[in-house]
Length: 74
Image (cartoon, rainbow, N blue to C red; front, top):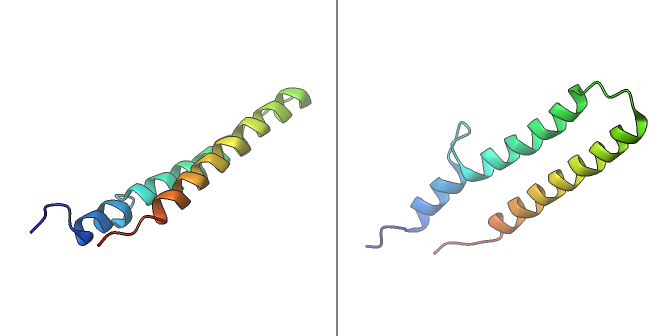
């Protein structure tokens, strides 16, 4: 029997209570959004620039999550 069977790999990705890779990436995405929301930016151009960076980070994390979720184990 192979060490990295379907159940083992599924457990790595979706382990409960923030232990899985997918859960950690989703938490990172949520925390990035929350950190930006908590920032007290007085300069509108800085805020717009930071928002663009945050949106790109969130988008890249979502793409990574989607790509990982598209992998199917046998």
